[in-house]
Image 1 (spheres, rainbow, N blue to C red):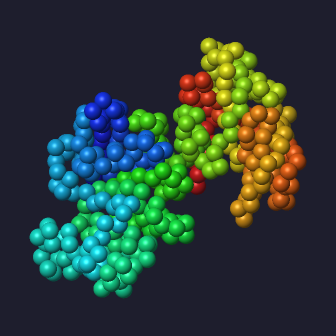
Image 2: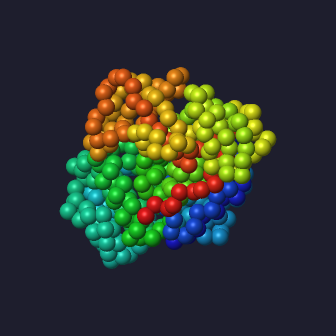
Image 3: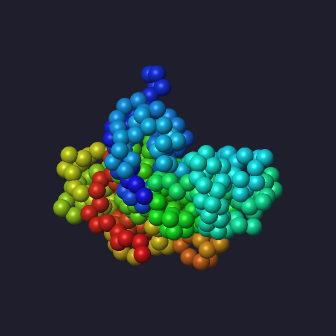
Length: 370
């Protein structure tokens, strides 16, 4: 295992800045996921750690050693990519053995490591097949095996599941998570899929336009997003955003008047300088209830456009005035695909975002997930 430290990392292609002053510490044995929209710099950052892209500025340390100028082959890193990159003329056994042969491992050592890796990934029965005889999920396991067999300090995964269908993606997510638990190595994983990030990561790094927006556990990012961007990116369906302005500041929070008409007291860190200024209220779809349980709850009436049935849960899509809305259905009975539904939300579940997109700190953080 090894820790990875990025200190003021920059990447530029000529005058085009891709990454800006990235500071990040990845601890021994952590499973860290880089997530963000296309063009955010997540894959470039991963490739810089792997030695496939040169660093324009800053320092990269692996196991307390500066590796800026160390070749990729000498960093003791295992990499798995979106394309499986298997040798088509070689069997699975030969594909797994190839990196060990290049490292001059003895024949007995190669046989032992290949057998151990194949058993770990449950591909023992595939060793004599060639890649064209394998399914997509099997090929991906072989690609992972080729990284594992070298016994690297750090594993890098660059969107490894994007070529698989939905069912296989779920299976491979579980497989990779189990591997991390068994091996205990440091793993860094890039994806644009926030569901993958939420289900697999110990720590998520959210990137936007070459900058880190927020670093934290899945729980932290979901319940305490640092910005409107993070709030909208993490969570499916995405958070609802309602316009309003600050009417007052109190020790217990900020008084907000919604454009829709309701006035609420949101328990966030008070800031007197914001009184009279525009604000955005964020509410997650799952935080709505069928009707106001308390007098302080927000009541919102939605004109229903579409109802999405997902088996165990149903979501309502519609509009509250000029605001697009999505909410978890209030009860087991399927609502009509048109008409109106009245919902409520507690101010304690609301988030406030200033005009610059930054969140006001909540006074009462939700308890950790079990």
